[in-house]
Amino acid sequence: MSTLLIEGGHRLQGRLAVGGNKNAALPLLAACLLTDDECVLTNVPRIGDVDVMVGLLQHLGAEVQGLGTTTLRVRAAKLSTCEADRALVGRLRGSVLLLGPLLARFGRARIAPPGGDFPARRTIATHLEALRALGARTVEDEEPGHVLEAPDGLHPASMYLDEASVTGTETALLAAAGASGATEIRHAAAEPHVVELCQFLRKMGAEVEGEGSSRIRIAGTARLRGAEHELGGDYIEAGSWAVVAAITGGEVAIEGAREEDLEVVSSVLQRMSVVCGMRDGVFTVEPSRPKRLRRITTGIWPGFPSDFVSLVTVLATQAEGRTLVHDWMYELRLFALEQLSGMGADVFLVDAHRVSVTGPTKLKGGRTLDSRDLRSGMSLIAAGLAADGQTRVAPLETVERGYSQLVERLETLGAKVSREQS
Image (tube, rainbow, N blue to C red; front, side):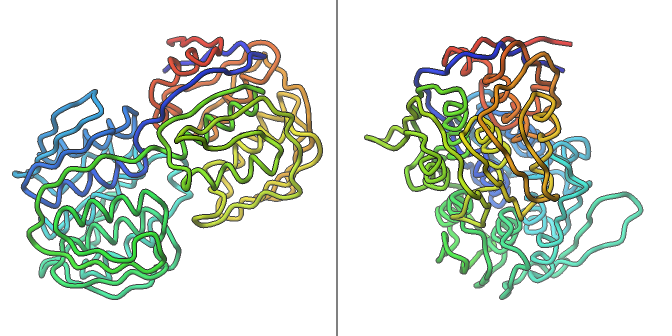
């Protein structure tokens, strides 16, 4: 396990480029299982979650070339099993994305309970209902997990998702791509990574319409072909660096993300009087004096993403006035609040979904913070960067699941950080 040692009080300054979208990489890798042909993915982020998904593909029998680089070549000509590696599944919630391709290839799929951040509190009921609509049936099994069968193959369907779940929509798309005929998915998620999966499936030979809207139509086929795809820039990573820059009063230029994707974050930053914006394809954050917002509320795309709740809460501790942060989607995003209180932040938990933050307050270091989940972990690093004194954040590997070369990039921007092994 690694610990990040942070000496706070230094403004971040400099320039960086974000990698490919983490949340697109996982479903695109799963989609490679739908064909015997080689698929090539470029601009793949070099992060922990991608490494785990690649390990899952290899365990199933796929050949993967380019490990440790941003270009991966995947060929799943001879899959050897329909059961995903239990240990790896326990580390990655995105492993649920394997169910559709495995059902399409084998007519059967088995995965252990998916892991990731707080797995016991995040259901995959929407995913399973989508697969049942496409002809899969649940098989009772003594071991924990999920076993599904489609002995007569998957078939097209018309379905309404009970929530606009991103991975639920992707699960339905992956399964429908392997079913001959037209499927319609209503109340579908519209995030950029869902759009990327639709684009990739179209390159593989599926007919797809409506991506980016709440109604997607996909006509699959039993014989999909190989395809190449360059991943778009990760707007969540770009937005994270933008918020971290604002928290430290820094000046950072961020390349690689699209302006329309970043608007969900930049609009909130600008309303908090953070000087930022896109110019010639580069998103810049300038030294600012943040001010409070009466309320920041999460929403389904293109609303303010729940992934940014922890980071914007830390920013609110450095903003003048009182801000109410309301995440109606999840309770777990507020995990870091108790630790922020221990650093001297003026935060008040209104209920499981709302927190009131009054600033600006000078945060105090001298603590070891628990990065229990990916996004909260990044927010605690941001708090450490803004705090007086030294702060430790562990385990660092949790944050590195979604942020490539994290320590090196922080150092490039002038942060005083180091990695400690234990």
